[in-house]
Length: 597
Image (tube, rainbow, N blue to C red; front, side, top):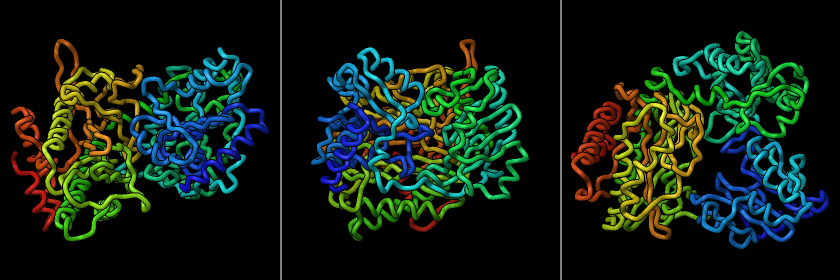
């Protein structure tokens, strides 16, 4: 964004704040569905300050504008915000208060803080309200101040909704509804309010295209004991699919009528909702009903893939791996002969995936980052700013695909020219961490964050660390980031984070040297039953991702015999699974890159 535009927009927001009697405005990276990836309509934070990262909170007062973001985005924020007057607030750094702590310290007693209640979940609202009330500061969730100054705000998306059908849909809609209603019965709930888009898509075996890279659609759902009301914009579901849904008791209502429906619920009935996944503005409409606060049952159910789903995921991984063989064969053949930039990588890798069976879209925006750009974990090349791939160093590529039978997410770092020994050292200790977690055995139900040190230990022993989590859950032809599991020691542990069979999680330790290079090696793994002993049931990981790891970047003397054996066994497995799917240069590349170390 042209930096002079940002001060104009911030000043327009300040004028709206002044007119409304507001001392501070908080703009979240969120929407009424608590989404991570947002439709353009809800990109107010990016529109106001120019920061394009997926995670960040903007705070504006009469004399201050700051963007809180985590370590994945610090360098990007410094770049995007340069010259705008908006300060990068490095969330998590020593001496940097959190958003609500900063507000409590800097807003005078009797002041007023505004945040759009449609974008703030109930749990966060309560925490912020309590912290601000202690300083006699009021939290106002009734205003959309950015909307007042965003004259050309985009419309809400209107992509059609379609059915996710067998054989890829391995659970029927009626089975999903029955499982959710069983949980409702346990909590004596008459109704369940569901706003998170992947939960609704999973529940009803529907998919859409309202959010880039995630096959979901904008809707709310109100599930009763016999029926479901789906609140969705008219025209998104055609008459034929409407009839199919009707057979399972699903009826349609206008998207913006959900608050009226909540307000009309009988006072003697009990509404169940997830306070982490429902906006406070939504809950205000149901003030008259009894409440039951519980995690969405679907949040847990969809995380545990059944064996039929896992078989489809394995087939999707084969297709994805074959596409990557084609891509890397082209890349290594073209390097030094064709002009290749980070943008070229994105184009070519998507083209390779698009040729594979049942591919739908990428699962996120490809990260192709050469040398110093790789030190920004969520770097994004643009037409205005990108690197040419030439000389010596390391190229980090983080990419993924949405297939009808699964969602993929993989990171590989490959040699360009001759990496130096320091780069190889960093690469090898990251590999050691990834291998260590791949080989883990752990009790069923252990909280996922507790596994994080297994991957970090070799990196910590080298006096290094990385700022992001080691693993996130992955959906089944749904969001590439999915809970409840998160392998990160920085995550607050809750009772729903226990590891269960069927959960798919990323395994992606890293190491980043600002201004030099970044390394991250990522496979997806699934929890499998390992053994049952007198001490209980134990799980282990099956590695799902199928793509060679570049041994040109490895210092073999740093690997133990066990680590080397794991790497050789993995490459033998990759070769066996992918050889039938590739030919020509891709086949030759696969054979070369899976040779025994």
